[in-house]
Amino acid sequence: MIRDTLVVDAGDVRLAVYVSGPRDAPPIILVHGYPDSATVWEPVRAQLDTRYRVIAYDVRGAGASGAPEGPGARRAYRLERLAADLAAVANATCGTRPFHLVGHDWGSIQSWESVTDPAFAGRIASYTSISGPCLDHASNGLRGSGGGAKTDGATKQPGALRQVLKSWYIFFFHLPLVPELVWRAGGARMWPLWLRVTEGIRPSSDPAQLRNALNGLNLYRANFIDRLLHPRARHAHAPVQFLVPMRDRYVGPPLSLGLERWLGTYTREELDASHWVVLRDPLRIATGIGRFVEQHAVRRDGEGSEGGAVNARTAGV
Image (spheres, rainbow, N blue to C red):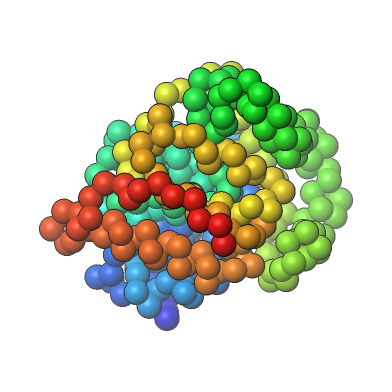
């Protein structure tokens, strides 16, 4: 399938967007995480773009997309700016058609901003989240106010502690200068080896790996502390599906439990997989995405053929 490359103006940056699949097929937008670029989605794209219009883009600062510059560069990575980027990509590639949204890792974290923003209501037909919680839901869960953890004292605290331990790298990324030195001193060069050892995959070398890693630190620094201290009430306006790698060394499965307060009824599927399942098992991920898309298909007249979220379930695989 031929892949077209577009350049989309998102205000302060220009975004590289990659599109393939039949023009009249249901559109699916894929948002990548850290320290990746849109190339992480290529194995999944190959499974989807015979049936769907598949759109992926390098997020700001990654791949071939532009990066904010100047003294306000860090604030330019705040969640609301990332949501505006998604809107620009959707407007350029989907027009007024509703689209299905999929996020992995930071792509999932940032996509929650749109899925819970009333301005996107009616635009997002479904949302599939892989290894990336809503920061507001997670923070509210840690506070015992609902979302991402069981709320009885006997179970919430151990689960919260386990997630804090899994999230050691977040604290590291907030250190001044040290993460930059590690990435420059060989971290970027050794990244494929890290994935080979920890994930059992052999990714292609990304020439933008160092740039992805350095710019993407702003994703953490611009958002985590603020959301931890000031979580918001964020309610989803689209049906939500979690694909949950049960051997994820970074994101604990409990972060996708107990979210009915924010999401209503939602779908949750457990996978015997690790964090970079999008590379390790793209067929499984594409199958999960396709199934959810079909359940929430949108006719060309804009009316959903199914409507509403499907019943919540947890399926061990």
